[in-house]
Length: 260
Length: 338
Image (cartoon, rainbow over all chains, first blue to last red; front, side, top):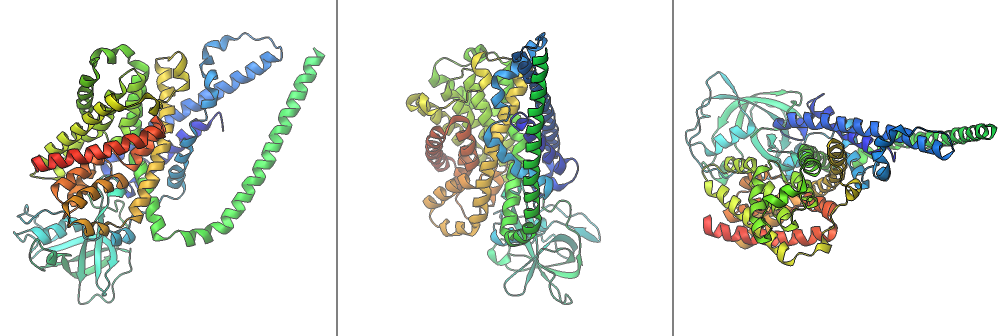
């Protein structure tokens, strides 16, 4: 461990980063999509550095055995004198001790990657809407059923003086959270850089034929129409409401967060 | 000859015995751990893996994962400076006069595109290369706050408010320069424990080998502190409910101080903090500015990184002074511009 500490740590961290970015899409649970190429590059570079450290460790071991034998009086050519470089700081090869903390996130990512943030975080982050102010929005694309993000729906519902949602059939995907009085919400977290800066958007779902709300944290796709509520741009307009025609259970999407 | 042979035999035996002892002890320990984990693990995991703990792990790994590329960028730059840039380059480029060198170094922060994780290793390697600490520290503070990536992100987060971007640029640069001057005037060498990289101390080798060794060491070292900071950030993220903010929105003074404090504990990366600031509705523009000026310069993750690189005595003094200066400068700029 003393000799291969650096190598082990670098390989572990590099492997963890590649596992979530190159070999799966798990990285989307933690950071935004644009970071992927940088994660892949970093992971590869770390693996490379780890291999270099491992080779150096092995070479150093050979060298030390060399020296042991020398001390025992065996004749040696000492041709490796120029590779000697590593010897004077052999104690630093294990890497700094604080570096072992890196095993915590690395092993977590390799063995049991933590889940995406869900209803727990959503319940703690109340009503932090961007104060945009009312105004008109760009026109929505035409089509019979329109796929729209929860964040987009809620900002149009609350701030759009052009009422672009009026008369449209809309389809949104998110997870389920529950209000205190039997209402339920379609919720999606929005991540800008990493999960530490997650903010929430949610839409209250109403429907006459929905027999009982779906389970908290289950993912659903809801199709329905906009119900205007409150005065635009005020607290009364929040959270926006959707009249659901169809609620469908779906699998958690690869990218669990909304993009900005 | 026979004596030698006997010796090798004895050596071999000793080695074999040692290997066997290791194998037996290690194997037994491994077995014990595996049994305990497989029996108790599921029970414990079910009890301890509450939604709050799950969210903690997610935020913790998220901060660490998103820090890795930037940290690596910073250590690549710093190792390259250490290995390939001769010392006289910096002494030639920067004026001898510290009072002049500080603003130049602060403005040079524009060139390092990244968040705050990248700037600590770079600043440390600049110091090792003979740059005056005051100038290197001004660079350390300004780089994550005023680089183009961050400024563009800020302008996207505050559409139609170019004054917010300008205010951020001015207040951050002012804080960095003032801190550099303060260090030049009052700073003491003994607070600053420059990392003596063992191999660099004696002959300071250059070239590819030194680059690789420096990179490995710096990344592992800073990475450990990044993890420490990520743990602190995740803990605050989970423990402090955001609804607490609503209590303070009434008083503009309290709200400014509160957001300046929040910037320290939330450790939002400097490329994202503008979006977070923009989403804090109900706060005055000056308070949001303070959040964005303090965040890249003082936060738990950075304090951990600085403590690891420059020593604890330095990190606490420097961070608290920086916090004060950043609050004052964003108050002034906010009052003047916004």
